[in-house]
Image 1 (cartoon, helix red, strand yellow):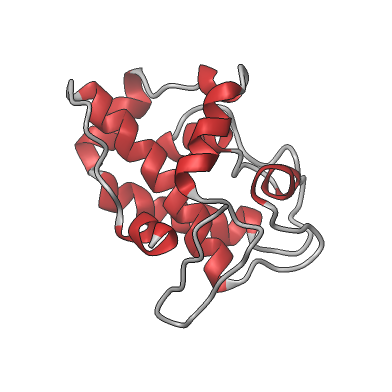
Image 2: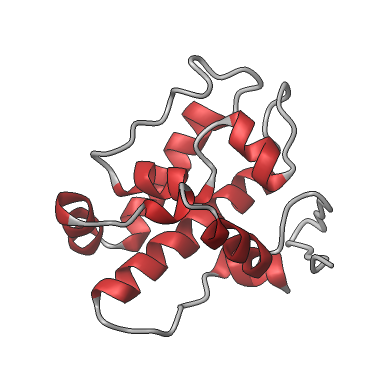
Length: 151
């Protein structure tokens, strides 16, 4: 059963998934698990730092996912050229169809603040895991968004 997280504003969406359960499911998808940060995208993440990359992610979420009917939905997220784009495909936060299928966030309405935070937290966990693997570590850092979601 998903943990019932409440953020600072008391939000809870029973359809949004517990991060541990989500990442177990993503690891079972041959399509989702093929994504890795390498080359210039990994160098960009490590060079800029996670905080800056998450600012970019928040902007991409706002522009490309948050609208009720985003332009080119299903094709709006490139497959390369930014670590966030790769993370979005790896975590099924790339389009509204994937958000609905994998995360239980319905299409056809604007994303709420808690749903944007949730998507950002999912992306953050994946990016942090990639950075950790690149550094040769096995421990996953827990993000503030993840901690509040899984609390």
